[in-house]
Structure formats: structure tokens, C-alpha cells
Length: 336
Image (cartoon, rainbow, N blue to C red; front, side):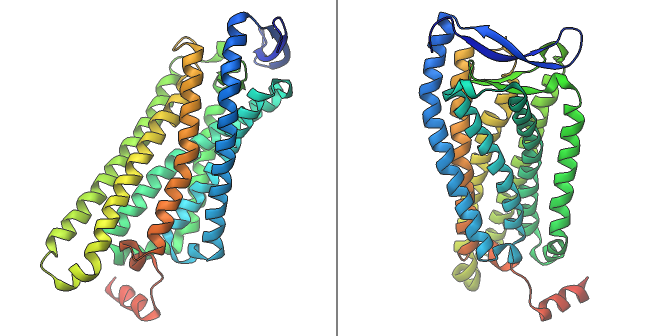
């Protein structure tokens, strides 16, 4: 793009909160240099995002085709999370395409995607807590855990409704609206003058609280598995059947817990705080957000593959997540 070309950006009207899309800004030498590096990175980003999106859709299609969702409460939650991640990856594809082809930029469409990405943000983070809680309940008391299976759809629907309502409440303030700025290669505030710095506390603490609760639940899961392994160490049947499953479950817990932590802290927590332009230099922000985006695009299919392989194998969760036979259900009902 030639020096001195005009570039469309979003601007907030001075006397109202209406977003104006017919505003253009002039390229300078620094912007052109920065844009060149962004275009090179966006080609890799959009390619990786598309591959990971197809990979995630394939795994979810495989799970649905085999009707795994009928037998696995945990996988139903993960499919719900996977749908949110599909939306998020599609938004990443949009941002990369806009960086490569800035002439396609439209302020209203960009703000529309910004509302989507912030709504997906509110839906995604509670899913991490729910997934960790489901895993903890399945390990702590597998017999009583079967009662939760009957309300799976209700619980997932309730979480979606609550998250969307929370996002609508937060986005009612137009100061929280963001749009993807191709020139800077990051999400920017659409109406910065309406944004209060106190909102940074909310966006940061929402991520930190979800991360802390999830890590605590994963730690409790790990401790419970180790406790079960030590309690039944002398049992021959446990060594033959359950000990390998517990060892594999512990490794998967560590892998999922660490991946979840990296994803939440580097991607979810950082991208929203970086919209404040005075925090970091634009080029550093662009590189960091691009790296975090690639990390998330790769980590989500990895998580799905880990959980799918665990559920398809002779895992510790296979027996407690499979539907009980009528005789077992009568025993559970009589005991309760």
C-alpha cells in the first residue's frame, strides 16, 4: 500500500455515543513498516486457524457420529466448549483476512465481530470452570455422579444463557465495544472516551478468577487420583485394571491443566487488556496477540484430541461416564 493512502477506522462521535464508520486516517512511515510485518504474520495466522478449525470440526463430527455425547457427560460439555472455540477461531480468521486485505474493512461489521468475540469470551471462560468441576465430580464420587447426567442439556443451556446475559450487561456500555484495527493488528476500543479504566479490573479479574478456580479443581482431581492409587496399592485387581487408567488420567489432567492455564493467561487475559494503546507499543502488542492467537488455535484441537483419546480408551472415566444398566440404576436409586 502506497505511502499517504487513506485507511478507514472507527471513530466515536464527539457529542454522542454513535459510532461513525466514514472516518479515514493517513498512513505514515511507521504504520507502513508495521503493516508489512502484520501482513506477513497474518498469512501464517489465517492458515493455522483454518487448519485447526477443520481439525476441530472433524473431531466434533466424529464424536457426534459415534453418539459419544449420549454416553459421556464430560464430552457433552467439551462439545459445547468446542462450539464456542469454533466461533472464536472464525473470528481470528476474520481478523487475519482483514489485515491481509484492509480494503474489505467495514466499521459496522468489525464492531459486530467485536461484540461476538467478547460474548464468546464470556461463554468460554465459565466452560473451563465447568469442565474442571465435572471432572472433579466424576473422580470424587462416580456413583452419585450418574445423577448429574440427566440434567446435562439443562446445565449447558443455563450456562450459555447466563454467559450471554452477562456479556449483554457488560456490552450495554458502548465504552466496552471493540473492533479489529488492521493497521495496528489488534482489537481496539471503538469509543475510547467512554471507556473507564476501572473496567480493566473487571476484564482482568474475570480471567484470573476463572483460571484460579479451574486450576484448584484440577489440583483437587490430581490429589484425589493419587489418594485412590495409594489406598488401593495392595489390591491385585486394582493394579491389573485401574492403576494404568489412573496413571493415564493423572498425565492427562496435568496436560489439560497446563494447556488451559497457558491459553487463559496468554490469550484470554492479555488480548482485552491490550486494547489500551498506552500499555504497550503497537508492534509488541501485535506480535503478542498474534502469537497468543496461534497458540489458542493450536491448543483447542489438542485438548479435544486428548479428551477424545481418553474417552475412547480404557480410561478411568469410561466406566463412570457410561450409562448404567437398569440393574445398576435401581441399585443407585435404592441407595439414595
